[in-house]
Length: 129
View 1 (cartoon, helix red, strand yellow):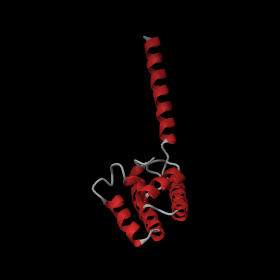
View 2 (cartoon, one colour):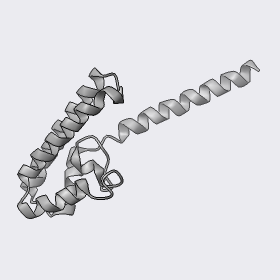
View 3 (spheres, helix red, strand yellow):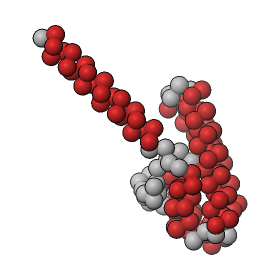
View 4 (cartoon, helix red, strand yellow):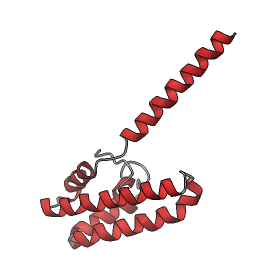
């Protein structure tokens, strides 16, 4: 019985460690994410570089927020909304009017929480990643 219990504890620990490593690996690379947006919106290299910097800044702010709230998503939600809105505003400032319209569709479209919801921040994954 003790051996079986020990095996279950070890299995759960291994799965939990793997899950943690997978979540850490899922944090998108800002440059790759910006390159994905470049393909979606036909961005110039200069626009792509600026957006990569915006995604990097957004991701860093999110990590600070998560650390300060100890990962409590209920406490983080209001600030996440503010951070996401600021990120969108900064990205739209880099885009042409035509790109901005297409970006709005990516961010606010019917699948915004599915594959393309991550275009509005620096920490979420996107289909392009």
